[in-house]
Amino acid sequence: MTAERKPLRIVLHDYPGHAFPIQLSRALARRGHAVLHLYFDQFQSPRGPVASLPDDPASLTIEGVHLDRPYRKYDLIHRAWMEQLYAKKLVERVRRFAPDVVFGGNAPLDPQAALQRWSRRHGVGFVFWLQDFYGVAIDGILRRKLGLLGRLVGWWYRALEQRLWRRSDQIVLITDDFRAPVQASGVDPARLHVIENWAPLDGLPQRDRYNGWAVANGLAATRNLLYSGTLGLKHNPALLVALAQEFRAVEDIRIVVVTEGIGHDVLAAEKARLRLDNLILLGFQPYEVLPDVIASGDVLVVLLETDAGIYSVPSKVLTYCCAGRAILGAIPPENLAARLIGREQAGLVASPDDAAGFAAAARSLMESSAERARLAAGGRAYAERSFDIETIADRFEAVLLQARRA
Image (tube, rainbow, N blue to C red; front, top):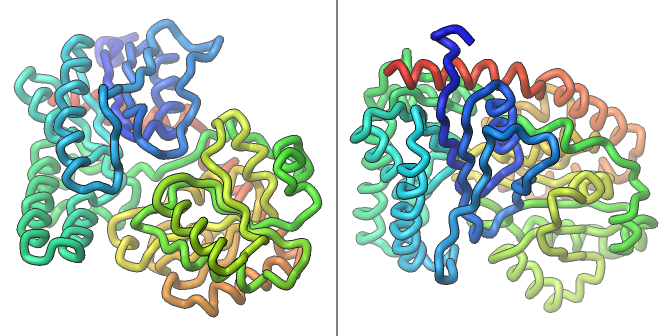
């Protein structure tokens, strides 16, 4: 390597442990960089391939940060306390690794702030990977739950997030839609880089509709609308209940939901109350079987609430594109995911406030196998064109080098 391309010591922190950041860490390690990839191993979320692979370079370490007590995701006071404990343990592991650059992404603001403080104190470059506007999300949730106190705490977190942006050496935005609000907080535009999310194409090969996972779960002989992933405060499970009600008289159609946590509990209660035998609830599946899971859906469903459209982009759309299946979305039309589905002709999208339009789109897709095939091909073509990890790694590597120089 040249002096400019001298190997870096990189910490990449992705709190949920998603698949595409792990793929990036592997790609950077293959280029000779020493990479420590950290995630929270108690966070309830679909997880990527965190176990060592036979061809992993020796310069790659993937570790889960673990706390010695249970973590309750939807208990706000408990969660805030646990995130402080997590931040201390996270920083201690980073300190022992002694990186040149810390790449903080998809993390709550308290751990993110602790990482940034440590980095600035020790002259280490810091890159903020802006996946969601956490401050905006926290503000909205706390205002609804805690009234005036919630407004005060929400304001504090919005101010903290903007301060973190201003103090970052570089910021990676997953959509150009994020640029204006970040610049408005006082960030130099030269430090902003738009790199859209992707999904690991090589880890999500297209599989047959009839596969072992579908057979084992009684889904091989039915037509399935399938939702896979987190179902939390940004999503409306009532739309999935409505789908089950829409198709309850169609003997061979199932609404399959692969999730855990609060959304799963809401659906389980509604399934029992309304006797929705066509609503199939399953827990998170191992990453190794994910290609078979999503291949088992004739249509893949994605949800995002209207007020979440300004601060979040559902990355499961990208996983669905890899599967080569038509997508059904209830997403705000201005959101990047909705625009992508429309632009690439990968599926049909209705507003999350339009339950009738969502149901009509679902029925339209289930009635036409030819239309499903056309839309599936559009999504898969986009994935093949856009998800080359080496091209993506080139862009991230350039940002990391800039952060080290800063």
